[in-house]
Length: 125
Image 1 (cartoon, rainbow, N blue to C red):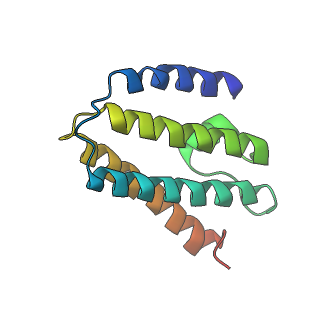
Image 2: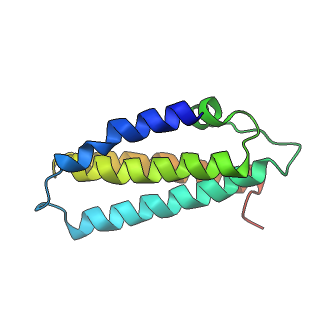
């Protein structure tokens, strides 16, 4: 897993060097904060999977990187990397593409959080 995290961090680290600094809007900030909040909730939910014998990680990318029953440490590293990468990619995208990326990311992450909450009762009691 460490190899994947390092590779992702290296790929995304160059994003901030080409990022346009003058077109970041209030809407971009709101969308980024909303995604980061959803990502954080998903991280807490995923960390709780290891304490539930009846659950296994179901999201494809996270399952590929973390395995069926991720440890708390691996979960923290994975979701921190996702959060930083998302911000760097958002900063690097042109203003006309950024809302699409942030919106799709938020819908995807939000759907996972709601599904975890409604179907599996993770972090919802």
